[in-house]
Image 1 (cartoon, one colour):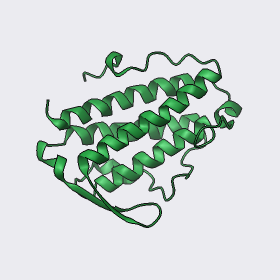
Image 2: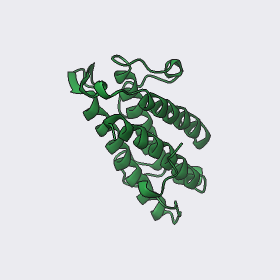
Image 3: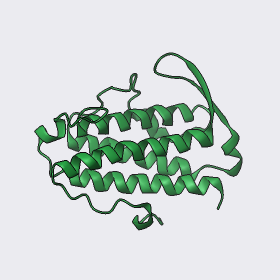
Image 4: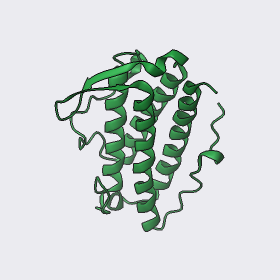
Length: 174
């Protein structure tokens, strides 16, 4: 399997599991969504915001070397890792869905020789950085898994069943 197919699979898994966890979050009250659960970004909603921020930062950085769909322009451009982009679940679901769809379509456009492309950008601390595209994509999807694990733990703490989360069981063959 070409390296790019792995990222198309990860992008589809990412979209599926995000929707599944958002469905589970529908069972939380506004207070529970905003409650500090001791996560890196405090609350469940804070963690979702952080994931949106980082996904948008990375997607916009990657678009400098590999143009992404026009709809990326309609999404916000976060400044810090703690930016709040959404304040409620409906807004979160809409932006998360749009962001995930962009990632799926973008990963579907990857070619074998894109793996060695280097993305140079300025990070949120003002430092110039350069990384190969394949490492950035691996980081992006691992980072999402890490914070979704925290969201899953918080949901468990609230007694919410969020279902199966394993890649092997995801319906990602589209």
